Structures are given as structure tokens and as C-alpha cells.
Length: 181
Image 1: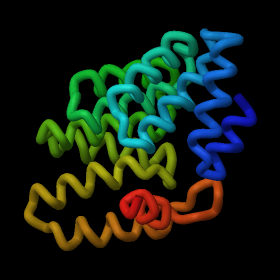
Image 2 (image 1 turned 120 degrees about the vertical axis):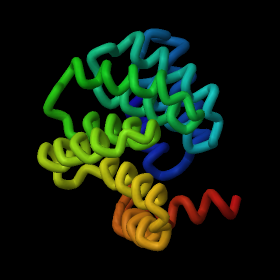
Image 3 (image 1 turned 180 degrees about the vertical axis):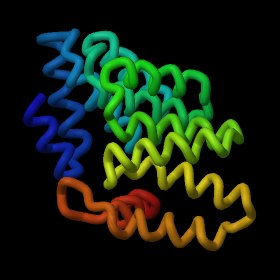
């Protein structure tokens, strides 16, 4: 599992997937292997498999807040807002002071058009974690709703340019690479 994480960090997805499958042959209840497989599937835009693997991850690691978050985002990407909300609420039960959970719930509120609730949850998220990115997504949704797409685009561009990945590349560089392939 550790070796697969290193391979994933170097964007060697097939090597990482191979190592994870070997780990799961030995220990099929290894939650970290399932969550990493889910991440690889997300990066490959294989949302259905990502969700299945992430559901196994939370089954075997029900107290791992990050697994609930990744599952929630996989559900959101499939426009399954209700399931994503339940996943974020499961994360909230684990730790009420984790900013990204409140930020994820802010996104859910924004997607439901509950703008006041989205603003309040975003404030909580930013107070708990000033580096939290999910409240920015809620803000982008609100700006788009208000017809201020130009401001929303500037925020999006800034987040993509200034968010760095573990391998040191910006999120924009990573996305550009995958859009071209």
C-alpha cells in the first residue's frame, strides 16, 4: 500500500493499481488500499468504480474522515447530492471541527440553492481551516448563480494555479496533462 502511494505520487497509476490489487489479494479488508483505488478511479474519470471502491473504504475504515470526503466528492461528481450530503454528515460525526467537512456541506447547500446556509457553512469552514478549498467552490457556485461568471472564473483560475499537489506541480498542470491525454 505504501509503495502504491509512492507510485500514485509520481502519477504512475497503473503501477499503483497493480500494487493495490496485490495488497488486496493478501488483505481484502485493507481500507487504505480501497480508498487509493478509488482515488485512481477518480483521476481516470471512472466515477462508478471510484464510488464502489470508496464505499468499501468507508466500510473497512468507518472512522477515516478523508475516505468519507473522497466518497462524497465522487458522489457529487455523479450529481448524487443526497448521497454526498450523507457522506459529509458521516464525516461530521467523526469530527465536528474539520473545516473541509463544513465546506463540503456548504457546496451541498449551494447546489440546493440554499445560499444563506452555504455562506454560513463556508464561514465555519474558513474559520476552522483558512486554507480550505471547498468553501471557494460554494462561493463560485453562488457567483455563477448571481450572473457573475467572470469573477467565478477568476477564482477558479487562481485556485487551479495556486494549489500544489504532493509532487510539486500545480493542479492546473495536472488537469492540463489529463485533458490532453
